[in-house]
Image 1 (cartoon, one colour):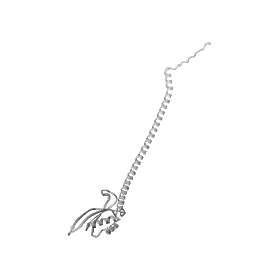
Image 2 (cartoon, helix red, strand yellow):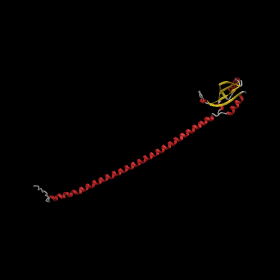
Image 3 (cartoon, rainbow, N blue to C red):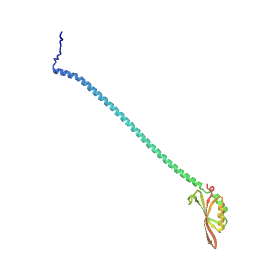
Image 4 (cartoon, rainbow, N blue to C red):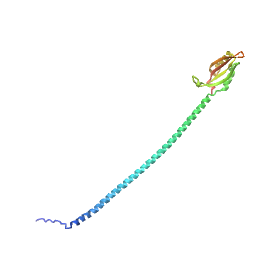
Length: 204
């Protein structure tokens, strides 16, 4: 038995068929357009949020930098105050040391003058008595010395005075710097200068 083939024939006009095809495509175009707009909107919102977050982070970093700079400025001010205080303390310590040195180098004059009065021979007269600092001598060392300037009636009396100074517990390293004879009314007088170092116990 032979097969019978039936073919479908579209009897609609061609312009109607085209119109139907366009009508079918229109919903699809609207859908894809809406999807595209949604995706673009999502990307825009996401990027905007990212930018806002970065701006916020940048602001926080700026604030932290500002706080760090302010702390650095305060730290610098504190260090300057500390340096000023240390300099003042150093200056005060130097002054105290100077006062301490001066106090230590004060001479016990009462004992020394009493000793000189006891050992000086008759007919030996002192015209001046001066204190000098041994640290300023050619061979510097700690301590004080006395410079005796005066006049003796004879060289023997002058020698006796020097010997008494050498044997005294108040002085040591006694030296005659000079002795010069001069005459007054046919009498001989001997001008002299003697230096002697003070025993350390006589200096406070």
